[in-house]
Image 1 (cartoon, one colour):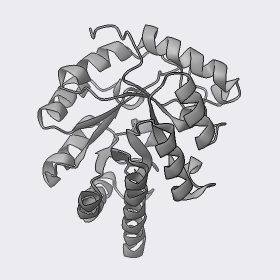
Image 2 (tube, one colour; image 1 turned 90 degrees about the vertical axis):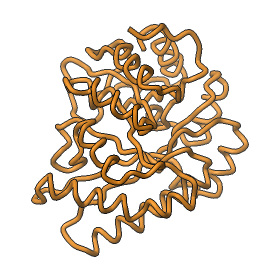
Image 3 (cartoon, rainbow, N blue to C red; image 1 turned 30 degrees about the vertical axis):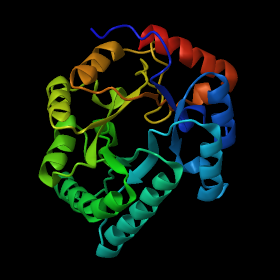
Length: 276
């Protein structure tokens, strides 16, 4: 069991957790709440542009563990795969402008493309943008998703598959983001997290909870402690593997998005200390 969290020094919140807020509102409210880090989703950049987003982030003083999200490499055509490479290079540039440590990769999947073939396209796609990431000094973190998303969002559904791509490409800027929502069910997760840490591939750690019953496959994640995931146990695994970065709260919840966001942020902080 991991030691109990006692302060907010390693707490980061994803802007998508407070989806009703703009980037400026997220930065202001997180800072007011004593939260020192924010992972930024691209949807909050789109209305204002990357230049203004970078200015806001710099003036806020908040650290940016990650820009979310790149990836979606598989495509049925060569032109589609090339377009994905071009977009990911742009996303890497956005991360550099924001001062983000990494781009989180939701790698993609396409109905009709066998998963093994899609994973090869993912590996080839990542290989195709690593030089750009190196020039921008931005890390890339593969985030394996729960198998329920294998059809159209991610052909990488386990820590092992993510680690295998890292092993094949062997680049210091390529690693893995572990999200408890996606890996808690996997009986190989602990061993693969240890493998990830032993090879310096463990870049990110995301937390939320799995609601019982889940009412929507995408937008019904639960606040920590309101579901069935042993978050502290998994946090213990990643810390034992050498991870000492931010614990990033990433919750997609229609229920919570409809609530008062200032109150919700206070509940996030309470749950972080008591249930993570």
